[in-house]
Image 1 (cartoon, rainbow, N blue to C red):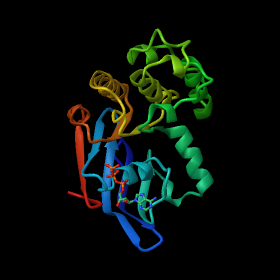
Image 2: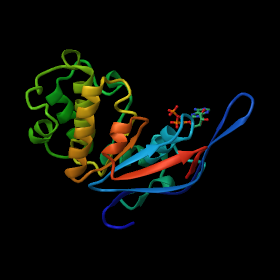
Image 3: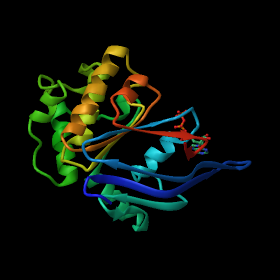
Image 4: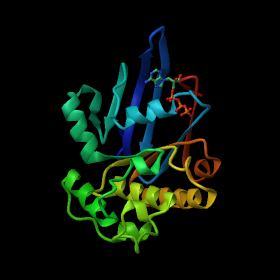
Amino acid sequence: MTPTEALRCEDVHQTYQTATHEVVALQEVSVSAARGRVTALVGPSGSGKSTLLRILACLERPVRGRVEIDGVDATAMSARGRRGLRRRRLGYVFQNPVDNLLGYLTVDEHLELAARLRGTGRPSGELLATLGLGHRGDSRPSGLSGGEQQRVALAFAAAGDPAALLADEPTAQLDRASAHLVGDAVRRLAALGHAVVVATHDPELVAVADDVVELVDGRIR
Ligand SMILES: Nc1ncnc2c1ncn2[C@@H]1O[C@H](COP(=O)(O)OP(=O)(O)OP(=O)(O)O)[C@@H](O)[C@H]1O
């Protein structure tokens, strides 16, 4: 791994067993994501973007291949070790804003929780200000728009200084104006030094990416 690489996978294969047959979701996939850069995973529906993102996020283990987080081989770890590594070093954002936040916590409390989970100090208010949420610290998710919720989700994922942030179609549920602000937020988080990886169909989000990885039928094109 080069010093700027936060995430890397090598020769990853993934299959799923259905009731009737085996689905090959990924074959011989090798990618890396660098700090300070936005990497977009693109490709047609079913090409394997979400599968690759979940594998990079250590939410799923590939049947074959190696995944490294900050130079640590996650695939060689126990499930418990991988969970700990994921909690400390990775932030993940789901497509649907309501899946990312806890209804009973304020925005500030979300960031405090993230820092506690990662074992770091209380995050500064700067992170929220950077994402245009400086005035929202006392709000609960129900008082925020979908776009604001998704930016809070990104802040929650970024608090406590993880190596990488991964987001699965983070703009898919948003109107264009909100999606644009999420694109901005993604760029700003990369500028803070995180590696940011997004799986997306959204051309506007692809346009803010430094690196674009195209998947077709589970392979890198
Ligand atoms: N849990 C699962 N069980 C069976 N097949 C699965 C499972 N998860 C994904 N697949 C299959 O793996 C392939 C890749 O799916 P994946 O969701 O990664 O693609 P995608 O590019 O993210 O698609 P989309 O853009 O529609 O979200 C598809 O053929 C999909 O049907």
